[in-house]
Length: 159
Image (cartoon, rainbow, N blue to C red; front, side, top):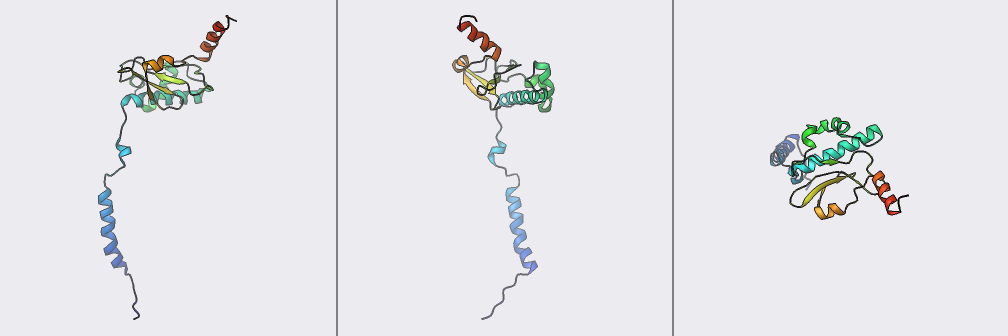
């Protein structure tokens, strides 16, 4: 038995086309669930603030000194005046302008003034927002390098 097996282009087309069409039809609009998940607006806002802060820092070679230096870097994400407000407490985020104590871990760049339900959103140089309790927030070292120096001078007898 010497059978020859040939596949004609038409046979491939007849078999392959329906498979291709089913594959495309079955995946139309299908995206991984991760892409359809959106986080709360406050996470985006505070992340944009921190990203704009680090962009400004890269451009100036130093952290932005005030909100006016920060706002142009926020425009790429939307209205700076809206992005600077926390949807949780309706108050402007506190942004730690000037030196932020880099070199001693990841210092906090911005945080909510009051937060919501005993939790406050903060973001550090990693640009990963996280919620901390009011108690945890109170224990955080929020000194800038100059404030830390003044504090340690007083502890050492005011040198």
